Structures are given as C-alpha cells and as structure tokens.
Length: 502
Ligand code: HEM
Image (cartoon, rainbow, N blue to C red; front, side, top):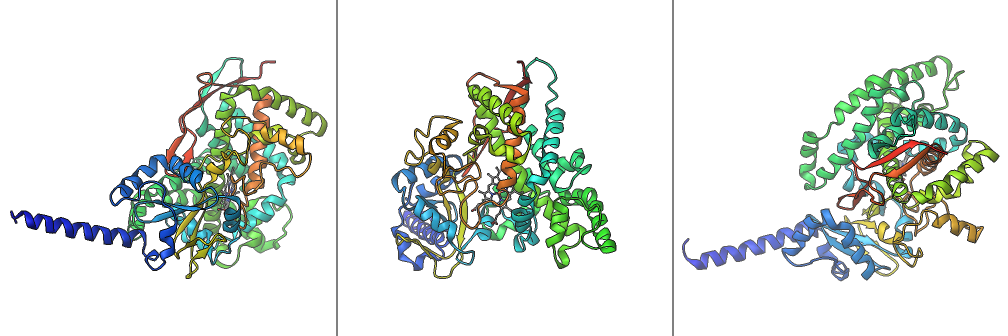
C-alpha cells in the first residue's frame, strides 16, 4: 500500500469512477444523443470546476444566465447543476415554441416537480388532478367585476389593521410580512369569505404553509430523486398546516356540502366565492371537505407567494423612487372621481399598471421537462433529450435592449408612456407576450393573473391615495435575497409610511 504506484492506480480508478458517475448523473439519456454535446455550455465545463460551478449557481445563477443570454440570445445553452444539465432557452422564437408545446411533449407538471415537488410538499392529488386551475381560469376571472367591492373593502380594512398608521409621524415597517398578511386576507375574502378571511390563525396558517412549501422545496430539490421523499418527511410541516386548515375551514365546507345535498346545487343564499366555484367542478372523491380544503390551501400557496413577492418588489421600488408617488396619486384621484372604484376603473389607471410591470424578479420562468421519448426539437435544430429540464431566461429578456429602451434605468412609467405613444396594440400588466414573462406565455400562462392584477392594482391605488411612502434610507433599496434562479425581495427590508399629508 506504501507503493506509490498503487496510489497512482487508485487515483486513476477514482477519476474514472467519478467521470462515469458524473456522466450517469448528468447525462443519463443524453449519452445516446450526440446532439446534446453541440449545445453550448455556459460557466465551467471542466471536470471538477463544473461541480464548483454547480454550487456557485446557488448564489450567481442570474449572472450566469445573463452571460449565457448575452452569448446565445436566440438559442439554447446549458448550465451544470449537481445531478444534471439544465437548458436555458432565449429569444422570442424559441420561447414561443416552449409556450406552445403540448403537455405530452414538454411537461409543465413534470417541470414544476423539479422546482416545487408538489407531490411531496403539498399532496399527490394536487399534481395528479389539477382541476382547480380551470376554476381559477374561468370562474374566478369571470367573477372579478362582481367581487370587486369585497376586494376593495378587504384592502381598506387589512391595510388599516396591519399598518396602524394614524398620524403624520413616519412609521418604519417590514414590508414582506405586512404584504403577505394583506394578500392572504384579500385573497381569502374571495376564496372563503367572511368571517374566516379575518381569522388570524387561519391566515397565519396559510402564510406559514406558503413559506414552508417554498423553503422546503428549495432544500428537497438539492437531493437526488430517491432521497427526496425521505428528506421531505423530515423537513416539511405539511401535515400540521393541513390539519389546522381542516379544523378551521372544514366546517364551512361541510356546511356547504350538506346544504347542497338538502337543497340542490343552486340553493338560495349560496355565497359567490371560490368554495362555491370549486364545488361546481369537483367530482367524485374531490367532493369531500378534506379534499376541498387541500385545494384551497394550495390555491393560497399559488396566490400568496407570487403576489406578495411582486408587490413587495413594487413597494421597495416606490420607496426608492418616490417621485412616482404623486403622479400615481393624481391618476387614481382623477379616475375615481370620474368612474368610482370598480374593476373597470382600474383599467384606466395606466400609471399604476405600468408601475407594477415586470416585477417578477426571478431569473427563470416556464420550467418544462422533456417527456417525449424522442426528445424535443426546436426550429433551429437544437434537440433536447428525454428527461431534460429547460426554462426561459426571463430576467435577461426583461433587461434586453432589443425589447426595452434603456432597460437598466428604473422608469416606473415606461409602459404608460408607450401606451400613450402607441394608442393601440398596447400591452398591460397581464400581458403574456414573449418579451414580457412575469406570468409566462403560451398554454400554461398563469391563470390567476387577472385576479392578481386586480388585487395588486387596487392595493397600490389604495396605498398611494392614502399614504406617503419613503425609503428607510433615502435612495437605498433593500438588497434582494438570491437562491439559485429565485430572486426574492429582501424578507426583512423596511419602508416608512405615514398618513397622507396634503
Ligand atoms: C403576481 C402574481 C403572480 C405571478 C407573477 C404568477 C406567475 C406565474 C407563472 C410564471 C406561472 C407559470 C407559467 C408557465 O410556466 O408557463 C404561473 C402558473 C400558475 N399560477 Fe400564477 N402567478 C401569480 C399569481 C397567481 C394567483 C393569484 C393564482 C391563483 C389564484 C395563480 C395560480 C397559478 C396556477 C394554478 C398556475 C398553473 C397554471 C397551469 O398549470 O397551466 N397565480 N403563475
């Protein structure tokens, strides 16, 4: 054993084993498809350095993806992760192809499992039968006009309760927890109605569940697939959150089910809320209180996380660029004077709309897994193998000079000005164009975006009308929190509020 030749031999064997292991981990199927080798690698491709790169990706994904976008802005490149390559898609033509691909070729559901393992952190029923997406797309969206007075009422009460700003004194408050509390409350006014939407334990449980899903997903996906169920069983609080939700929401749903059994589906006095809309579409074993509670818990996750992140980004932007406040206040005053508070009136608030645009800070969007056995071929000839995970470089697209003039300069009203210039063919906050990707584009573009836009625009309009807002330190925006492709607003960042002074 002391013979140095053995050391060399073991060294060589270790290197071969590692190389084989690496190939098996990163390219289980790609070995058969030599075309993958022609897809450019961004970042290190070296033997050990690619692993260093995979760790560094957790902190610098955005920079690496931006570098890839600059080099291949109309194509596909790949980045090394610990157990696989990931493929990043750039440019309008290819992004459109991702958005248009059917589920049996590029799977949204399988792609989602790679970033949020829904089966483990929420429940298999949700990923196997996502019928509630239809309820969100149709009933929730159709009822936005009718439900707007409730949304508005809840926004007023919720901000009064969480801000507790009554005087001309500035009050410095942490933004993200406040906004999560408001979004949870306003969303639940439509999901489950009064009085539950104001129950502190119920709301706290939904917020905690949301945070838990995001945090535990981030950790679980770092492990190989076979270990993920075990890791999930150690770190998620799913069962506790579910039990609390069943305790608090279960009786309301039982009551609805029993009224429906007694008086039929259109019983007099039936509330116009998400529970009723779900009951119109739920079938078989989904028509039980626990199954419906899980749907609503999951819808809370979909709504609270994304909307709170987007609005917190917007509030940090507003506090850092307070010159946007007065023009928005004037706009809201003018619109409300002419049209009152309504969903339609929000359409006339173009500055408010513009200010909320592009507030999806993530580096990537539209995660898809190739599920077609033969792989997926783009029109430029690039072939991704079966099992490959791909996504679109959203942040780089939003900062592309070809799409937006002077993109690095913060201009909250750039889209309002464009709207005025073009008069027609303008896009607004809910647009799902290939160069405007906060909600994705194509077949799986977010079905909750109409609700989200209504809620967030009404919230921003309310704040600028009633409060003065400034940064804790003038001109300083709390730094974003970065974890891989996720870029979320600073969780402890603060902003100062006071009652409007003029
Ligand atoms: C600002 C807030 C929001 C943002 C930025 C956002 C963003 C997104 C994105 C990027 C996707 C994936 C698109 C794709 O992969 O092609 C998505 C999907 C989805 N979102 Fe949202 N979302 C928001 C609010 C909401 C709300 C409020 C709800 C529910 C009420 C919701 C429910 C969903 C659902 C169910 C899907 C899956 C769609 C499908 O399977 O086809 N989202 N969202």
